[in-house]
Image 1 (tube, rainbow, N blue to C red):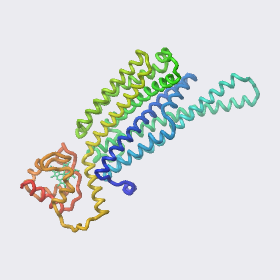
Image 2: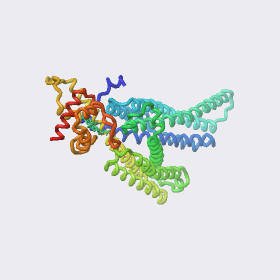
Image 3: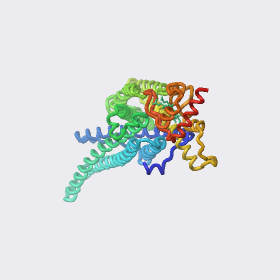
Image 4: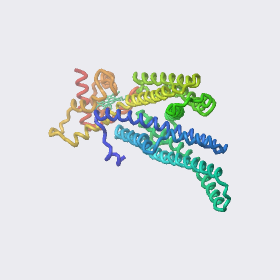
Length: 457
Ligand code: HEC
């Protein structure tokens, strides 16, 4: 972590709110783009392998169209995928300035995997386009001339070898890209899961801990299904946009029989499965994240799912492709509400961590700009206000329990209480563990005295 300590500093409480906001924006770019990248790669690879088996150039064209239409160009990919991922990682490292290094390592591995997958995806895309060009060149060649010189024979042989080579590469790059991408996303989710659960954060000591965590798998499954849903609706929408621009009539048979039907079915099946995963995910959410706004966004996500499915079904029945516009909008609404739900749950479950980090920020600030009154006179009230009040009140529950509930058992015993404050141990399973405040013994005593005096007044 030493390298990061120089680059990354704990955020103050004002800056924390800005970071939450930036995090939402980065997710809003990263998740849809990565979904399209994943969905595009999977669908395109599937069709590519099919085309190879059947030696069918129509299917090859479809495979190429899918990848061209979903993964956009390199610069956009960089801006929507890699930059947001790095931004998100930086924010996490700031929030969790002092904690466990396991999730931080996961984030870094995730970025490396993502960059690899990104490079492989765009190589896949270029190669598949090259292959298509060779195919069409060959086609024109066989049709326009029948010179049978030795040269042309040789050329033909070379082309065959080149094609074979390229075919193998395309297939390999496609598979590797999918694998690295999913692994990258899995590590990202794993890291978020560890960060949002204080108990996991304490006990995770290797990066492999995430493979045993069901909620990380559920998040991955949700992501893949969402990828299918978004990708197929995007493809349907693009088909619509193309025909809409040309202003030509759409051949109904063409899409009820052909590939559009496949996309529609994929879109419907995947969209319908989304709520099931959401419910599972909900059941295992830590209690600390169950706040009203989380329920509200889950509700919005359910309703949007329902509307999307109805719209997709309407395309099949009417059949009017214009519904794909609204379907696409509602899919984005599903993504948006999913992100908001996760971010709010996350925010609620890391409250105490943020309190610690904010305090740390204040300390660093004070170190940098020391006040002249830093004569070491230990003042219990001051320590309480600066170190404890963020998490404790006397009468109401904040991050930690109210003193009125916990003090009676100390029976006005300053020694015993200061022992706890000096070195907090886990007490109540309903609360996260209290972070050690790093006080000196005499400071702990002063604050214990202050609390007991104030309490018994
Ligand atoms: C980051 C939040 C946070 C800060 C800061 C914090 N606490 Fe706590 N405190 C907690 C939590 C959470 C618990 C519950 C721990 C448990 O039950 O295991 C707790 C529990 C306690 C308890 C009850 C222990 C018991 O036996 O049940 C006392 C007393 C206490 N804190 C005093 C303090 C004092 C004094 C300070 C300041 C020096 C302080 N806390 C700072 C979060 C915090």
